[in-house]
Image (cartoon, rainbow, N blue to C red; front, side, top):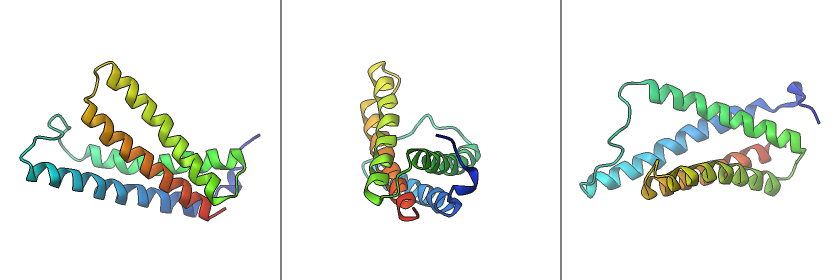
Length: 133
């Protein structure tokens, strides 16, 4: 199989990137507000400045594009199958977080937050790409 650059649907890549950013903003805003209400510190070691936001925007579109590429390579044109591909993509990323958690590189709480985030958003991205096939 090969990638046909002209047959990649860029509208769902753009919609997926925007959805990724919106979802991330909502997901983490809800978590941060919950933690503030509980007077619990959360994300105490995050970086300062705007770079993390710029990077997040770029990653949103790159992830949407990579999922579009994967779906095209697989050749699926079914909504349910593409949704499953998105879920599987999120599951693979979650396994990396599990490895990091097992080696003590991140807390179990952070692990569950990251896994929830990735499983949901990649399933949504798969659905978005599936709607345009």
